[in-house]
Amino acid sequence: MPTSPAPAAATLPDRLLEAADRALRALFAPASATRPAPGPAAGPLDDGQRRAAAQLMRVNHAGEMAAQGLYHGQALAARDPQLRAHLLAAGQEEADHLAWCRTRLSELGDRPSHLDPLWYAGSLALGVVAGVLGDRTSLGFIAETERQVERHLDDHLQRLPAADERSRAILTQMRSDEIVHGQQARDAGGLELPAPVRSLMRATSRLMTTTASHF
Ligand SMILES: [Fe+2]
Ligand SMILES: [Fe+2]
Image (cartoon, rainbow, N blue to C red):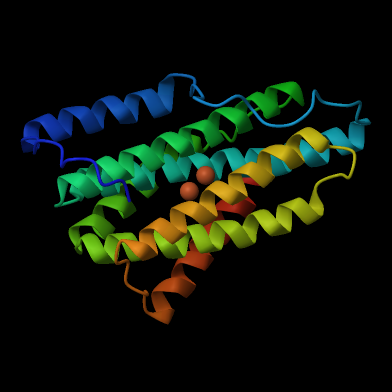
């Protein structure tokens, strides 16, 4: 976690307005990356490879919409202003991931999931619940989410067509960022979540990844 001086506490109306602004941007403004998309210029893929890669990248784009919702919801409910600033900074890295997945989907001539607003809204609500349960639970929720995302990315890295170096480079950079996010949350005192909660989180993300790959 950054050790810069604690930001001034914002009032609840301020925080709600900021949260609404972040939500509108996530849903309706194209995500802008602060880091260029990793990877070489895309090599030629045949139609089957292109479709297979696009299906995976659509799922990853939906996952990053969900990450935006989670971080925004948790930031809204965080009690400690320094934790809130940290969540928003990590959220900006997730915005890079979102923008890279979107760029790659366009390069592959495909589209994001129609249900992206649903992933964002559902995750925002979940993030608020995690935040209301307390900062250490909220951090534990991040640590577990990032651990599950890391495993999910390992699976996608296996399944990507070998020729798709660009998507591979994007997912590889995302994976290392998610590992750092998870470690930071544990270092900041994140609690280990109970096994039933971890299973419920896995089931929810399976539902999302299956649905997002088709719709
Ligand atoms: Fe991410
Ligand atoms: Fe992350």
